[in-house]
Each structure stands twice: as structure tokens, then as C-alpha cells.
Image 1 (cartoon, helix red, strand yellow):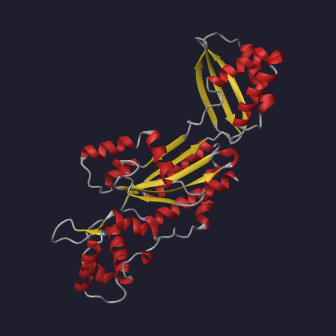
Image 2: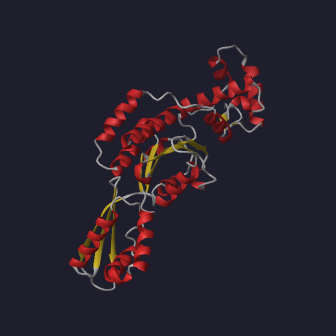
Length: 346
């Protein structure tokens, strides 16, 4: 989608671009004289005012006060942002990010660093998440006895993600029994995908009940307690929420407080990422005005992408900010971080 695909004339499209660009830079209503000075080809302020009136009638501009200039609407920002291509991703920047990522020992650390880098590069809210999938492959499990018939279950996948869960049992299980179960799983299933392990355990419990009844019954107990159920254990890091305080969002103190609280809700942010980042891996996703997904975020935009990593893990990175964000810079930052993340995992 670009400006030329709309019903507006090329001149009107160019003037709308200038207005949006000027507003992003200053945050102030844009006057016709300002647009006239920015244009390469001369056009009188009177002619520009006529164009601005047409754009206002079409829903692209609003006027805060009678004597003020015009302000782009969400419709204008959406058109402007969708018409852009991300700035060229400098290889030097990717190499710098690769060096930073190489210092992180795990996916979790890279996710945390990604959110920090995105916020630092764009001066907006940086978000990064890693979503486990059932196609991940097992490295090993550990079962550690705790007090009061509790057991710490530790599952490590081959992408070096670690998932911990403490469960309470109805009956005590000895240390030797836990060791036998752990050794059986690690010997038989290391390198298997999680969904394949589940299916095979069900099959073995049915077909080899006589030989493995005690061990498999105990193991299936831990399965039912969630040993291999960690789909909801999504790693999420968000950094830079404070930048919204200076974003001139025209929110009351109460609404700003509600917005900042919303950003602390993990499920809410993951739902937001899922709703926007539906395109194929590596392709930018963009939504200007998030009101359809979350009414508290109607004045915000999100730019992001997701990266498919080895072992079935999906990493999602995004920038959340006001509609008046620097879209080319944000798009470039997201693509750079995404490319570096992907190359680190290759």
C-alpha cells in the first residue's frame, strides 16, 4: 500500500507526506506556511490550505483549534507508515549486534538484551519474547526431591532454554525412584521432540505395561503434572515503558497509569504480539493504532517481526510507541535486531 494507491492526487499525497513528516519531527500542528517552505516545488500557502481542507474532509487531518495548523489522524499515520520501506540495514550495525548477542549464553539472555537494544535504538518501548513450541527437542530433564512431597522438575531443551516447575505429589517418591525416572527419560528421549516424547510414552505405557509398569506409571504421573507442558512458559521482556511519559499522548494521569499497568501484564502483551505479528518469519508487521486489540493502546503503534529459531522456538521482537514515532528508524532497528538474532542462532 502506498500514497499513490489512494484516490488522492499525487500533489495531495505529497503534501500529506510532508505534514506527517513535519508533525513527527516537531509534535506541533503543521501550518500551510510550514509545508510551503518544505516543498521543492513552489506552491502558495493558500493552495496548500485548500489541499489541507480536502485532506481533512477525507479524514486524514484534524484541527485542534480554529487558528492552529493541522494534525495527522490515525488514518494518515497508517497510510504514511504502510508506504514506507525500512531504512537500509547497515551491515556494521548487524555485526555490532552480533557481538553483543554472542556474549549471551542463552536464548533468555538474548531476549532480554533484544528488548534493551530496541528501546535504546528507538527511544520507545522495546519488547522481546520467546515462545516454546512442542517441536522443540529435549536435551535433558532433572527431578529433585524437596520437602513436603514436592519435586522440582527441570526440563532443558537443545536451544538451552530451561523450564522449572515445582509440583506437589500425593505420595512420597524416593530419591532413587526420581533418579531412575530421570535416567530413563534422558537415555531414551534426549534429542526427541517434545510432542514425539508424549506420543511415545503413551504408546509404551499401553504396550509395555508388564515390563515398565512401575517406572512408566511414575513417569506418566510427572507428565500429568506438567513435565512436558510448558507451552505457556513464554519468556517476555519489555523495556522503556517510561518513554511513554514523554510521548505527548494527551492522556490524563489516570489513563496513563492504566496504560503503564497494562504493559506489566504478560498475557496482554503476548496477545498484542500475536495479533500483529501474523506475517511470515522475518517480515515486518505493522499496526498503527492498537485500539482494536486493546482499547488502552488506541494511541500507540507497534512494529515487529518474529524469527524462527532452531528447535522450534519462535522469537518475537517489536517496538511499541506513539503513532508519532519515527517509523523508518524503528523499522530499521527491528530488522537489524531480528537479523542479528537470527544469525546468532544459525
